[in-house]
Image (cartoon, rainbow, N blue to C red; front, side, top):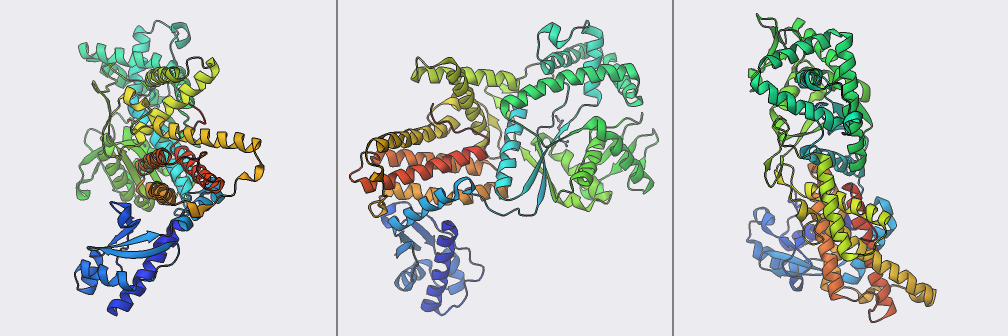
Length: 585
Ligand code: ARG
């Protein structure tokens, strides 16, 4: 690949030059990075000689000057010059740009793929909602991250199994059942005209409000849990019905967001397994029974606290099922790694989970990792489902779709209704997804719906719009070439190579390492940022340079190749983020 050739070609030439100039045969572990220069007039890329200073016991500026005299660079480099401590290199720009375009266009769909993860199976858990309420803004970040990570890891050669864990059991679920029995009045989502997950979510809110006045309700829910775990038929029947309502609602939300799974686990099916694991550990003396009957593990030797694994009434807690789920997954999937995409609120939970798995003898716990991410706020403040001030995923999508419709109508007053419906969806989802993905995982996000749909700024619609501009140019080119002679387009790259063209070409070259970097760091923001830079570089290129009106047919054709390559990169990059790349907006 060009990027590797550039990197390794430079490294080899540098090593030879260091030998010739300083008699030092080996660069050893010196990191050789070619970085962008502040200004193309001093070079296309630069190497800061700082890491060589120690090896050669000389000042970086002296090293750069000597190396510039002796270095022999291979194609696509043209020459090197020293600027202070930097050894800057100039590309043979026409050769370089021709190679970039050819490489992108020949690789097609596979441009940017690598084999970082070849032969490795990753179980990627994300979403994992509770069945007591609809999904909220935080779940949207989670779902979107999960889908993007799945695609990025696949592009990096991993075999990815997308798994969901439905937490469909436990005291919070029983709370919605108590509420339904007391205040549901026999209604159903259908009779109430409400989406199933929202219907149950309303009951959950009701429970919280009533329980604030009447603490006995909490006891009632806990008793219901005991009866549920005993398998009492009437309790199970209500539970099944209510879960069904919620799951149907989730299905609709997933479909709308474009979220899918390869395997869905349910807490109700794995918690028993978790219990057995705990009871076995109890026999093995890896945890102990408290006087009141509860089972606890002492994790203070691991730098953590003591942790209850089974309640004194025998019922399971959240971590019980996680033990069972993890072990069941390893048995079923035989993963090499398992990643849990779960909000940072649960950092401690996962430290405890992994410590317990290790203690109970599951060596693969070493290969489990919590992919933790920050909270999502709306400008008003934190989302809180218990108080009922939720920002539901569905409502959010509605709101952003309405904003995107307004933006589309501004441009196309008389757009056909079905085309409008399609585009408003594409743009709204692009807006939401990109906004959430273009932020490093550890950062909290304040989601600003209006900013997210803007066609300018660091947004998905901006990248999508850049893509449509290129599609428009390519469409025009096809139309005009079918009018004139078909042979009009032999690209003459020798005329290519101004600063804007070269800057764009460099970003196309670096796309594969952006994908790889995102996979290595499990951080789609690496890729999102690269797409923004590419879109901006395209805007600069197109602002500075006529494409279809360029001076010669050879130059028209060469610029069209650069446009085609950029279109491919933006499309593939958006696809890896789970975002559609429309041809028109
Ligand atoms: N259902 C949980 C919640 O909404 C998140 C589950 C995360 N995954 C897990 N394996 N514990 O808080």
